[in-house]
Length: 455
Ligand code: GUN
Ligand code: FE
Image 1: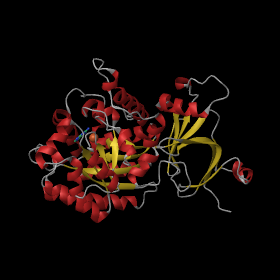
Image 2: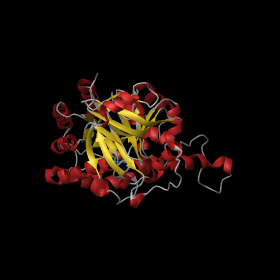
Image 3: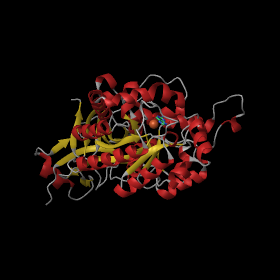
Image 4: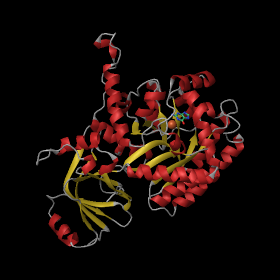
């Protein structure tokens, strides 16, 4: 009989589809030595008692106590680790001014590796403590500090996908913070890719290099073309910002005479492992191109409220077959918690559907069929994020990584309002998503390894 490295007896929630969750009540989760879910044994299966008896008295067994529940670890599809020190401040001016007034000067500080280490260690730990087991990061233009972020993810046990940011456009960047030249941007990116791939070979949970043109305005055509080629040559993920705000969308229209999506595609930057942040201003043709190429949207609902001049029509793009996950967009979004972002995704979608201007009649105020449910937001946080990255993560299912958070609903300082002995598990799932705070997240595993614990 196969020996499992760990067996958990627990009640868990996972996504079945955008519309439906699966409640795995009192199941046995059997994990192999690579940190993969080898088997889930349900109580009605014939060998349930046999597996339970076989493991119950061993060190490999863990009974998740009453009041605690398991959820898949969350996937942050868009996070500027290098903006963590800025989080919660400076959300008062439009995107373009925000970048040039606050953000580029903050990112420039990452030429100092000691500063980079301080900030990166803290953001990785903070995300793990918030239940984020995989993150797709923007670092900065600096090659060494970007490699350092990947090393910190590797060391702390987080599945990190990390990009050295490229920005070489002389008119849209300042001499104090840009790649020195198009050639050096491409060379540094290739060296970065090779270094992180090497690191990935010895990292259980995986770390991955990501080709990262910041966004079209800050990049020359030559560098965008070259980055598309590098991504293809080394078969890497790709990330950027796409059609985020009125300003960014119009800037690309004026420079290239087309939308971001069309341009990114022509530069070879839209493919199955591409994740584009925001995408609020995608046309239907752009969205169709995303669906066709397998490119995903990182939906950043908190950040969008400050910088995107709009609400992403997530329901519409999902129904067109576009992969969507959620991103914190630290520090355009102030919260490192994807719980907060899922809540905002639902709230924003309701405001898009109903509209907000009461001087208009109700039937002209909003956009029909825009709301998403909490179940759909949970899908984006987990399975949708995994599909966006083309990785076997985000589901509690055989063959998927054991990336899991244990949520304790009975923590004294953050007790969930549950007053009946018999808990309806569907209601409980909704309460968890709306009410959990970091105190409730007591254990976090990535690829079978315990990486955060509050006990
Ligand atoms: N567009 C280009 N750079 C950025 C960034 O750092 N944050 C956001 N939200 N949008 C961007
Ligand atoms: Fe961003």
